[in-house]
Length: 337
Image (cartoon, rainbow, N blue to C red; front, side):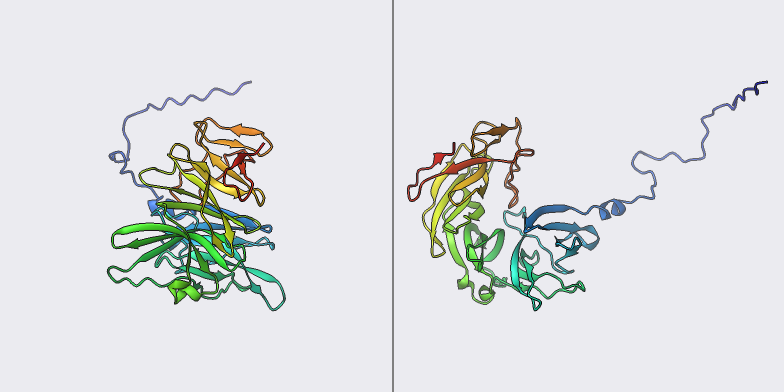
């Protein structure tokens, strides 16, 4: 015999023990600090010889940015301890603020890594060795002069780092704030620390434009590529990709390879000693074309504006970008086929 059906005939009422509150004022055990404290921003990853680095923002440390290294042993470790904050203020928006470089050989003969980074508090460049097995690291060593802070003296900032062909310098964008004016150049900062006390040890490589980005030495060290543009154009309006021949560590006059007032070119990367990959919006949207003539494109912007340093990249899903090659010493470029 089937069981009788139980009917809930309890009348619903409008009564409630909860006190009505205006929208947005309801109490919650989850606070804004709880939410923000769980947000660890990871950005600007780099790989070298099978090892990985990235910047990581730490909300529990007032937003300090450290650099994390994932080595061959498979364990990520912070390279920068508390009080060190890897954040550059070039263009005010910052960007990638570090560069891995090879350090001196350790007693066991194993070569280790160090990083060059821009410290937020004073905007100086520092060289920091990787921590030891116990997690302890040495204090970072300054590579650039300390800010004087006196009225009328120049305040210097650095970003967009690339290792020089001989491995003895970092080639990067320097931003100079002086007497109410801001100028920029591509400079060479020695890794031996000689410029920390002697500003003249920093060499100027390229100057004259209003803005610079993406300095990139060729694999053989004989050429330097970079992107530049001038006010009032924004980097998505029009930029120039220029390449100069390098003799004894000194670049010559840059030849225009691609870009102009109506074309934005970003993210140059060397394919080999004489040809480049790049990203360009010349067809009206970001276009990527390979050196073999194959192409892929997307109908919407696939690259970020250069608000921050080292943000350019190939469009998502595309393994190749446009390539330009040219015979030297002739300055006129030719399209890769």
